[in-house]
Length: 145
Length: 111
Ligand SMILES: Nc1ncnc2c1ncn2[C@@H]1O[C@H](COP(=O)(O)OP(=O)(O)OP(=O)(O)O)[C@@H](O)[C@H]1O
Ligand SMILES: [Mg+2]
Image (cartoon, rainbow over all chains, first blue to last red; front, side, top):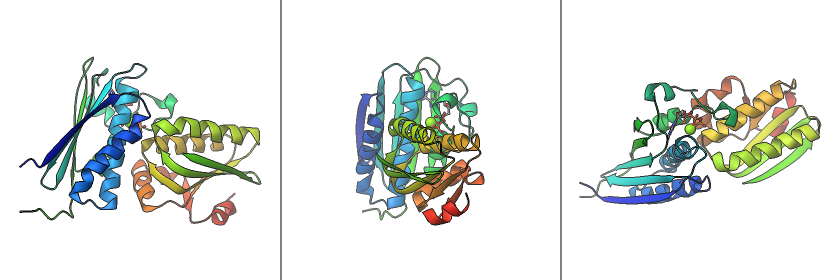
């Protein structure tokens, strides 16, 4: 059963990183999350949105898409860009792998998403864009009849 | 993000107040590095008490300041690391090279 959903889109400006994570966190609050669960979601959203902005669109401006669905006690978050895409997904998901060390990126974004969320799925096509799907299960939720 | 920079001997103490992400990191980095160079300091202490949010941009920022200190025979220390920050810092493995302390006075002892 699909309980609720929302969609959001915004230009790839870095000011929107905090906007995106606050919106998703406030949407998630209907699941009665713990402070830690909410902070996990905020961090993972920040990682994926930041990646769309700095890697997906690099110096160009494009649109970042965020979709959320609540299914029972789970929140599914999709973050998409129509940017340059990823050639080798397995390689970029390795901890410490970064193509932007000169910007002081640490290469830990995917590792953070993986550890802070319950599921992470990455789809990408070079020249087309990247699609990130993450799921967080809210353990404290008592599912209403 | 509000940043408070104070100098204690050869140490630069940086107090964070707000959220550290890709958007805020750039400016923070510049402010810290400028003060560190201008005052010819050796060590940096990052006080994370007022830091309400940090993503991997913070890992990059801490690593970058660690390298700057190292190149200058200095050290970097973290103080007031709460459980949220602890979680992301642990994932990054940063505690292998950067130590955390409970208070400023404790951190100052190592320099
Ligand atoms: N949306 C995207 N579009 C294109 N490439 C991407 C995208 N997201 C990630 N990448 C590639 O994957 C690499 C690893 O991403 P990850 O988030 O793990 O690290 P990072 O962004 O480089 O550093 P950090 O997130 O620690 O600041 C990036 O350096 C980039 O090459
Ligand atoms: Mg990243």
